[in-house]
Length: 100
Length: 226
Image (tube, rainbow over all chains, first blue to last red; front, side, top):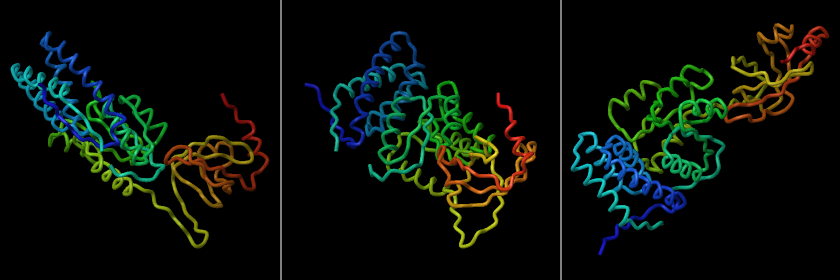
């Protein structure tokens, strides 16, 4: 049984969260393609934006994954890149957002 | 997130990332600011010229371009050089912060952005950059140099667009190289109506000529426009 990650976000952001999450799903698709072609520059670019934006939207832990993934790309640590890409996908799959 | 009343202050966001744009649009509009947006250096410069914003939130990394290009434009044009700029980046390094401030950014803000902190810093810088409002008990004589644009002219008067806002009835003594060619400089004028806001920080003032001679009026009527 998969775990749920519940995050409470400012209600003012409720309107823009769906687009943010849709863009994250696009990230997952792009990362999967990039991994098959060893295109780590693309993954680093995605991770860089994730590291900057997720925390702004109130998803601090997701931003942390982005930071670690970006750092792994910069050091070309393939095992860590794959591991954090997996963490990114898992986080989104388990995420449940509440607004208040 | 704290809400506040509407303000006429316009903030231009120059950022190529959709999620950042959506986020800033939401928090700025919720706080009552007018929001403008551009996604690269070229569009950013066009937006600055069109809107003359009160503040620019500028992404350091604009695709293959750099936010420094926008600051370079601002600093080389006196009409825009006082617009405050916050450089924003997910890359936070001492070197980038120092180079941003050295280039002319007023502040450097690292991501993630925290709405309340960002809004506090925005309000603080806007307050610092508010233009003084001069109020006089008696009619004063004030001299000022201002870059302006002559929007319309006829033998009755002209419409001047500039950063100066005349709210009451004033007598103006205008010197202009363009008017000098027509024999109309220096000229005495009176404001015809309170200024109209053309863009944030840019005002349109209608003034009427006083005591114009027939030769000068004829020169103005004969202006050829192409």
